[in-house]
Length: 197
Image 1: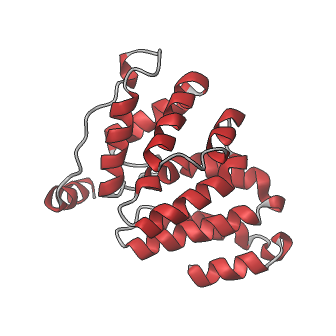
Image 2: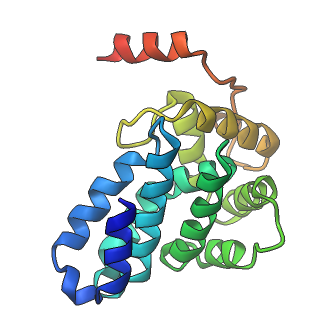
């Protein structure tokens, strides 16, 4: 994926053609991979795609709305390289996010820690996009992304922390109260995945 990211950066958007969409769809499946190198490579490739998305703006905007949760969570990935490349990717993808206040929050976040940025995003969502905050809560309850992909164990812990700190931000009622999460043990994770197959 890193080699493909280098190629994508050198190509003009029109040179990618329909491969752009196929690459984007395939890459996001590695955001929650167990291996750090796969997560890092996937975020790097997505950053390269964001840089060359001018001819695919509407497609990429839809992709960003599907994958923003993974980017938000992996800002605090336990691997520093993954966290760093994730932040770069989130910054490059910010112009595709809605509402516009969310774009501004992310693009002006250079001095914030990852945890502070996550909290600021949740504050903004509670105020300007409560449906997006509810998506976070729904994903937290299911421990799965909307595409059915299981969250990485560390992402579950980060999501629980974000929502715990964000408890009470939304005025839409108790449905948005964040459940308290702990990261499942490897035995629990494998048991859950076996029972759902």
